[in-house]
View (cartoon, rainbow, N blue to C red):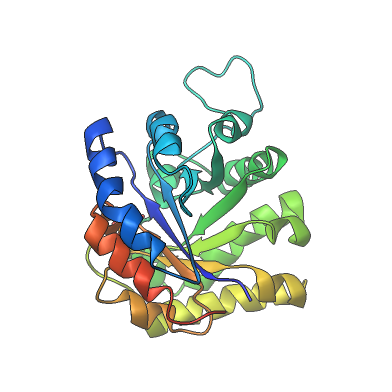
Length: 254
Ligand code: 13P
């Protein structure tokens, strides 16, 4: 049975000093926790600093993005193998901010998912609908399309080597969390969608919820049968709040 997984996405926040302060408060209490996997995704420029700070701790490192290409004339880009070189284990692909602000399409996200696997990284595929799409009754169709693009590109076995994060766009950074029932409904749908192709992959793939996860709502979200952890933005910037979310992840094993 896999542990729950809690990933902090620091987005474009942090400094050398605040990163050190965060870990000085976070590492010792984290050692007391059991049966929960924890990762942080700092801005790429801080990966080397963080790799030094988390050595001999159970924290995994993740990146927030990667190039779909392996190397070459791609100014400003970072490849999966470079992220591996700096100790990364996870990489987010298709975060809604990159889909909306950087124009990442389902096809590009699928190419990045594949590039991550090729580099030996575990991709965290982010999916989720906007508020308009939810109001139009399109939530499940949007999520299907986002999943299907990756299934078309790599197949179900490779999809199962990654992690999926359901992040409704309207719940990100808004303080408006999906109710545990709303989240569970989509998580169950995602698992069933995969189960139509491979029940085994559906059973073993971790599906995280993201969108205003906080210390006071994490336990209820994580107690839903198809929610295997969280992808946490704002609340992962504060050691105390992130710890309380990680603590909630201990309460039940898959
Ligand atoms: P918040 O937790 O700040 O809503 O952000 C969620 C998110 O986008 C994590 O990737």
